[in-house]
Amino acid sequence: VQLQASGGGLVQAGGSLTLTCTYSGTFHSLSAMSWYRQAPGKQRELVARYPTVGNTEYLASVKDRFTIARDSAEKAVYLHMNSLKPEDTAVYYCNADGFLHGKGWSPGRSFNAWGQGTQVTVSS
Image 1 (cartoon, one colour):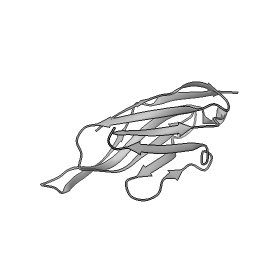
Image 2 (cartoon, rainbow, N blue to C red):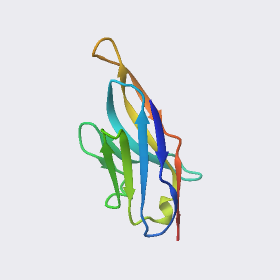
Image 3 (tube, rainbow, N blue to C red):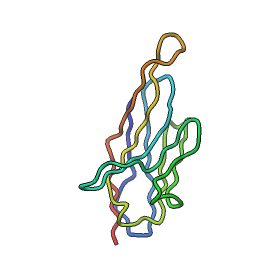
């Protein structure tokens, strides 16, 4: 499974950006698509998660500002980011987890795939 992220850039505080992640490859099923971020000197953190079953999840600090959306037909997941703050500056990574094909119609082993990351810089 391959992921390609795009849409990062430089934006002023209060501005908006939309990140796009497209995926390709063959697999049995997706459990979730997610966006993570990693700021300099900090650990990578989960920003938003869109499970195939269940509710979306958000990092507390981005809730009500960011929205994750998924388009299965386009094989894409988006992160709409509004009211951006300097502390949102980070490299953003998309992630997919699910199951590869197994025997017949059954799921096989699980996978966890990452995109290459896209830089988001918010100036004050």
